[in-house]
Length: 322
Image (cartoon, rainbow, N blue to C red; front, side):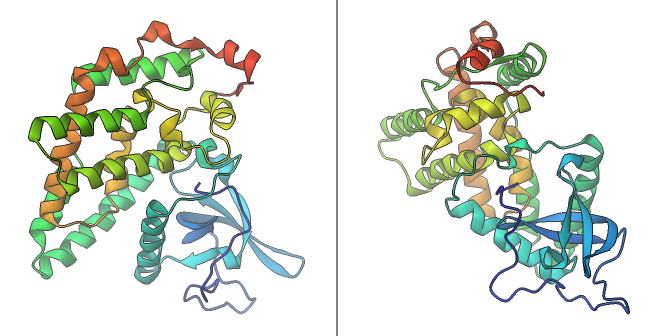
């Protein structure tokens, strides 16, 4: 998750109950109840699996929806919120805030998080249900066009040659115990800059909107890499390569940037934008993918160019699990 700190709780007057009323025995939540749970500075959907009274305080064993069971944990009531519309709005506000602000790096963060297939399916079902409710509200307020535009943008068509690159990348890391040699050249920052230079020369000038979209890609990459863009066998390498205030975008290259484009539909499903903004962003993202495809031999490693995970282990240490 977004932070390795497990002790951060609700702030600015937020209370544990999130609108809950205690039962006769003092419990604020019950087994099987779906809730929202603080984990570091962010809030995640969760489900209460067990409830126990420990040292005169009720503790709740939660499972974070969409995440591996290894992250299940016991928490106190001050980490939980009721699953209400009001608290869902609060969750989205925190997500948006964390997406803009630059978070501090932690040695062991959410890069160790992996999704189980069952949880992912459950989360997608919940997302579809919430999206349907949101669409109804937008239709009633006359904003159906904006909602349809957002749904269209979620479908980012990745060129076939880049899809093959993603498959080869997955096979190298998870099946052949190989990793991308770091630091990469060109790195993500340099690739974004090259695209910006190309657009400037081609169009004579670059619009502020395109520049902001490229900044957004860089920001999303730096935030998402430790959370959802690494395979387990790459985590130790990440901890060795990204230290102090180094940005992942100056260390990693197009291989991991492509993984971000796969995740964009999931990330964008929580973003509200006007139709014109959606359309401009969609066009820029597709054009950027074509730019990577055109420069595939320069930006992306061939499968044979990955280095053995044992080399990383000998030099810097490596993760044992996949």
